[in-house]
Length: 397
Ligand SMILES: *Cc1c(COP(=O)(O)O)cnc(C)c1O
Image 1 (tube, rainbow, N blue to C red):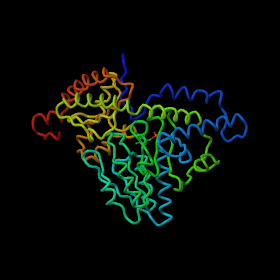
Image 2 (image 1 turned 45 degrees about the horizontal axis):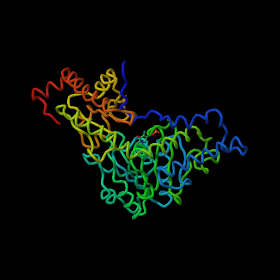
Image 3 (image 1 turned 60 degrees about the vertical axis):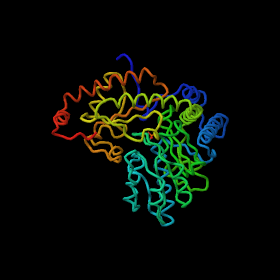
Image 4 (image 1 turned 45 degrees about the vertical axis):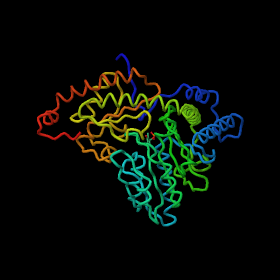
């Protein structure tokens, strides 16, 4: 294969040089355990606290409000379970979320339903957005938690987080947001946006895999789910992943320092890509065109099966996805696209291209040249497409 164009940055990103450089000493020279009282341990402890300070600065909170975890999934689990437990102690067992959250959120909520909680799944509009008014209308006296993702991992839509935060603060309901796709990509300010709890994951912003963080506003109880030592002020036991944590803080610091220029660059590439792909007949952009992540493009092509499209694109050196990495392998269409109201047939033919700063104008030209060829090839072989062309079936897009 000649060249690989990696356009699956919503699944994971390549590590930045800065993150690798920052981590390297912690594999060899600085090997101490931060809980040790001797010098070798204390050097590691200083690195841990310096990393906490950097992450806190990027999110606009206090270092004491940051807890390190193994990633986005763990952060989501702990925040949601913690808020649920806190609610239950006050007799509040109602939770509000949206129908198109990440499975780390949805599956945690399904478990809580089995444990006696009631969950309201807000419908997502066809543009991939919910409104603060809809959240407000769903809040009841027994609502313990609102959890709404900052930006969607499949269609990239950015929710009105500040407005939702305001509604929650005014009604005294805990507000958690899964900001895994947002942090390091768009501005995230927990104070200004009235966010009580938030989840991030390093590998989505050019940091290492297997490390993340959660923010829990001071004064709000955080419950422990991994018992053991007193690490993370007793809220998350286990010897800290120092190298990973240092790598994450370096990656986030770098991403936040380039937020504006990267955002503008990626938006330009994104718009060019969308314009190019919309020229394909019977194609559709999923999610609001402007209120979306700078690097996210998600399209449906009628009469095309997503998995075949991906495999043929891969053979041409284009790495894309048909939805979330977590659901690929299953034949069900994405719950996110179904939540946007797309019919099953259409949702099956989806393509997500998620760009990073490493992508170039030439990459976009190549993708825009190759995707239509692959689609035409697949449509020519498709019995469904034949029926659509003959008018036996009605075009849905
Ligand atoms: C990737 C992702 C997660 C899971 O993060 P991990 O660090 O892989 O556990 C959670 N939520 C969203 C929105 C994501 O994109």
